[in-house]
Image (cartoon, rainbow, N blue to C red; front, side):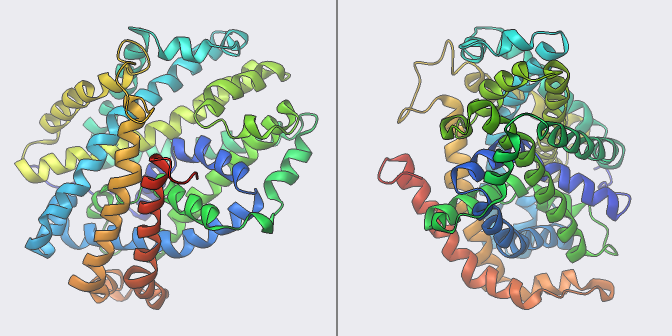
Length: 451
């Protein structure tokens, strides 16, 4: 068996973990949720939850990985044999997400190609996006290309592949986000959009707002997918775990905030303050924004930079998903990294094809009005992730006990200033929120309530 890889230092770990957390959820999902749930109100609630709920789950997962030196399946089982099933359940999530996430990554490459070849006006036409994803062959080409990029990075391993790419991509991503955000504020009417984004609306504080912010944490911080356990297994014992998690949170939240600053004022100005334009979901990035760019001065240039940015964000998250699966195969079957990488690439392509063609040749397959891609997203994100997070809280809170995590965090004399908050969150508060998220997600899908 190959020697297990490691990040060369704390900076490499933080950038790679932050790269995992910064993905499509930050770029398009965070902005439209912030717009939908009261702008500044959502921002404040999200920030509070990130430094309490998100921090506690992330530090537990990374500590489990570093303590055991194993990916999710092996990690839970090595700490308590009765919980081997939790490791398997956690492993299923990235296996489900990676293929359909790569489908969306392919869409991003397509739009980058369109903009860089001067096709901004074409992409802004009504029906362009639906015609593209409804095609028989073209979506497959971009899907395979995106997954190929991802596999290439994972092939080279932790330090030479993932860490090197993260060290290059993450600073570029920050610079590009800042550039577009500042430029977007120069558009006529954007300042009103800025005020809408930043101003708290206390009347909008509700259970729905809190649950929406809580659900965003899973997307935004790569929680309950086995990713942070895997990355934690590559972390050196002498590196401070608590400060690393805080830095990941700051990086991730800053990018999400800047994404909102980049998108909401510009879309607000373009649509004249229309809420329907801001609440367009996936269409915000592939339908509304191309229209915004085509109407802007230097719009083709700005749009090209934007889709480079989104590609980097999508790629770093996809790398973490594939690395988690590859790590599981290496640990479970004692295969080499290259063999595991080839096998994961092959079966992920096969699993992704139905999602890729689900808007075209396979559009007749649906469930409760959801396409194949939407079904995979609902099962993985709205059902399995809250279930895994809930079981992880029970596992840490009442099986291995919080002290096991505290001992790992405080190795080599490291400080853990938030140990009391961590213990209360992981044992009592987080499970209550997770049950609410699970129940509301299912009820929303069934049409019982609307969130």
